[in-house]
Image (tube, rainbow, N blue to C red):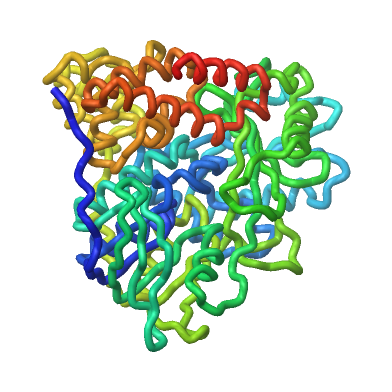
Amino acid sequence: MSFSRPARPSLQGSNFDIAIIGGGINGVAIARECALAGRRVLLVEQADFASGTTSRATRIIHGGLRYLEHGEIGLVRESLRERERLLRERPHLVHPLEFVLALPTHGIKRSALAIRIGIWLYRRAARSHAAAANGSLAALESSLDRGLNLSLFPYEDAQCEYPERLVAEWIAEAAEAGAIVRNYTVALEILTREGKARGLRLRDSITNEESEATADWIVNAAGPWADELLKSSQLEHRQLIGGVRGSHLVLPVFNGAPTQAVYAEAADGRTVFVIPWAGQVLVGTTEVPQEEAPDRAEPTLPEIEYLLAAVRMLFPQSGIGTTDIRYSYAGVRPLPYSPRESLSAISRRHLLHHHLEDGVAGLITVIGGKLTTAAALARDCALMMGVKAPDMNATTVAIESGSGIESALSEWSRRIALVGHIPTATAAAIVEWHGRRAEFIVRISSQDEALRRPLCPHSEHIVAEAVEAVQRESAVTLADILLRRVPVALGACWDEDCSRTAAERIGSVLGWTEALQRTELESFVEERRRFLHPARAAARAQNRESLFVERMR
């Protein structure tokens, strides 16, 4: 059985109601919103969907507790509302996570009473009464540096371990609603005539074809690349984006590692998170102006040392050193250009700039935004274009919560296991990443033993998920599959044997020749290295992967 990649028909001469540039979470959310409302939609992305800023985030869905300090009450309310929507609609991907605000008792500007009042207001806005259990707080307190004399303030937010998966689901839903979605398609120019945006000049990086498509509205959701696109289109405008780099570390689970997300302050008073993630520990983030092109963003040595110092300060018993760092990655937040403001004070609220004031109608540039509020941004953008949003009560819930999300997911996993005659652990892994699509994937896998094989010896995820990625979720390359659709290559186990095994098993099912398998494997190894920067985090990892690529040639 072989599953080939879907065809990519030419876009030359095509006409759309709305054309969107940029396949991060914001652009994908806009495409989905407009397609569900019945509009003819084109979405193009120069690389792969969710391969830029979206995949380089701190991976939390939060209401923005710290925004209260800046008086952004409206943003907090919106964020909390969207957090609850995601928890309800995507419970397999977005789940509650216990957070603990850890601040030194002495030497801080805020009193304990002020902090407790802030958290009380936060919970009240979220209609939540959740708090950390005394036992888990005691365990955390025993691991933290007692010399800092920290006060702990528990509250609840949420985590989306894999926002790449959320984007994949929204991409599939947009396409099923009629949108044309194209990754590896570069927007060379926004075409204007007589003071109106009329269409796009495009180049398909897969077929090398250049084409022109027309549209009534153009949305520039290119994130940190937005200004560059306007410049290449020779459109006059003031600078809109002030790119701010945020770097992260991925560490092994160390001695005393928290089971909660710890929200603390580094030595300079900046916010830092230490979060359990994918069987590892995620630490972030920094705030540094990105002077170079966004695609050249990577953690600098000072940023790595800064984050590592914060972990050691909080958890002195951890024994964590530079050689323990598994990966480091960086993304560029497309915040509003605000040269006179401190980076931490720049609002995280999204802005929609209609270029009518610049003499071009029908063109909107998206500024800012975050994972939590992407769907709200999409609704605002749709309204600006006169698109009536679909009935909010008609949204499909991925998993019926019933007697609780955890029990619902467990019951669904048991049903899937029976349907596909597969181990419950495999079924649970598929449900966790695919929700209701899990049953379809498992039914497909029952047709061929090759589809039921694990992607690597350490994983419960199977080859059939890779087929789903290609046929429904617009994956093109091996890297698309393993880093963003079925992101097993971000896990703690991944090594060169995993890469080789996955390439062989996926390639055989997709009908790849041995030469294509080898090419895809080498490209994947290189893209993973560029994304996760193992060479910067630990030189030994670079040496192992470099030797591996050489052996494959």
